[in-house]
Image 1 (tube, rainbow, N blue to C red):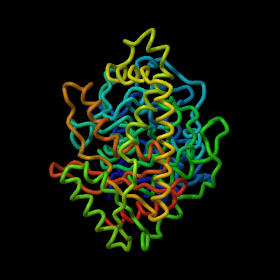
Image 2: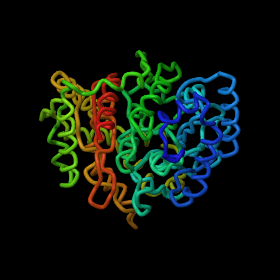
Image 3: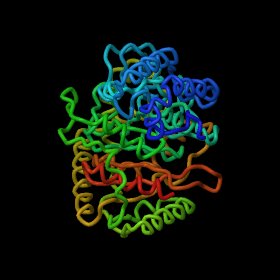
Image 4: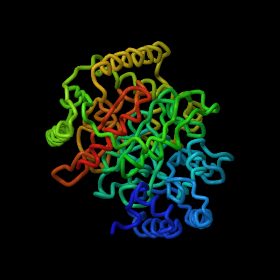
Length: 455
């Protein structure tokens, strides 16, 4: 039998509902795994063992008294440390916020808790979301459980590492230019960047407010669907929140891909290493074997997505941190300080042009979605790299290499799903990206789930 700490929420929930598994037993399994493994993986900044076990006992009591709330009831969830949590330290991976304890909880976390989810602790991250490696000089680097000498990706590296190592059943992440999808791809886990505004960003420390996405991370597509069902929804406290129907996504997963049209732009394939391309081609053949139609397409202006996404991110990020950058620049990690300082050089015309490019890029994607339902690409051009001694340059290098793959969905706000598609010759996970049109998460998850179960 699969160890409890590695089981998915979709597997655990029926056992909890049937009173065959106690949330306390599950939480003890997670906490024992944290005690044993996290000193090396370093997925957590703050572990809430006593609080989590107390809430697990409370959940058990509710369930035994027939007050079962649904598939998140009693499920352990790790929270990325840029989500505000009332009464619990929230650092955003920065020494600047090492003693910050919010007096309210982020809307997305509150929704998960109201559904019965139990917070295991606050997860490690690249400082303020400003990188894709999760090197962190203040709280230590989060490490890839498949090879501790490699990055788990960032900035949600603690979330992906926790999932891969069985240190939490579910996790939250944020994605501005790939920070959910890259970590998922590099650790063999799953991540969803929803449509911009579908999940509230209220109470999440911002990186770039016009591109920040809050979303779920997990060990299966079905678990992402469960999380999204409870995380999504309009929030008047978030200016970017949108009013849209929120179905129970996990109830619409098993329709397969027969007749689904999947578009493949060469732009992404041509930037990937050979073994990534070969694994991706095999994944496309799998879709065809399941009844999908795979079509090579061209989307104009993809080559300017990185420019637009990067300029907006550093411009908005430096604006948010401007006073700290002016008066106490040494308080930032070196790589993040360089990242934000670059943003202070952004001019208003450059920023406006970047926003115009985003609109133009969105129009190009809308034209593409008139002919296909899903767009498939490799998620990263190569597997998780080993940490380098020059970690500052490495972060800049990985941002440069990965942004062509992540920026298009981030800049346009369309939903994007990262799922495993195979392994490298060295046994490291390789990820595939599936994108769909705005507010079509139901279809996106359906297609991802079909691939997940076929393999």
